[in-house]
Image (cartoon, rainbow, N blue to C red; front, side):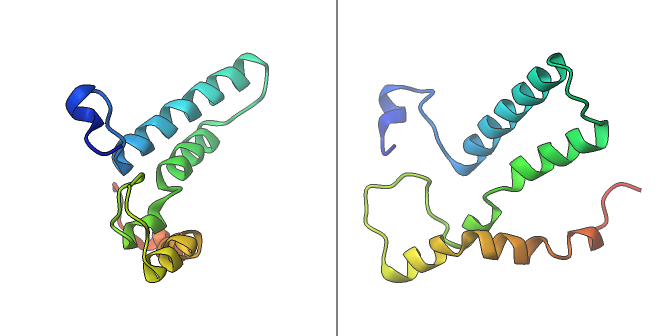
Length: 101
């Protein structure tokens, strides 16, 4: 998005903003599904929210903005193409991370 936020102050699209937008859409989806009578447990809801927040975690290796004007190098493109595999590898041992009590 380049410098569009200089003209439109709310025009930001970092990975953080992208993740929050995805979370918002998932919350809407859960609310609508429940309204339509679909049974979603609290643990399933939590899992959906965690999954949507982490869905692009593999992109961390490229350290690139979501949208950029510059062409990717071959190495950057290869890393970008592998982001799902990298994300899975990063999360393989997530259950060993101490969270809460």
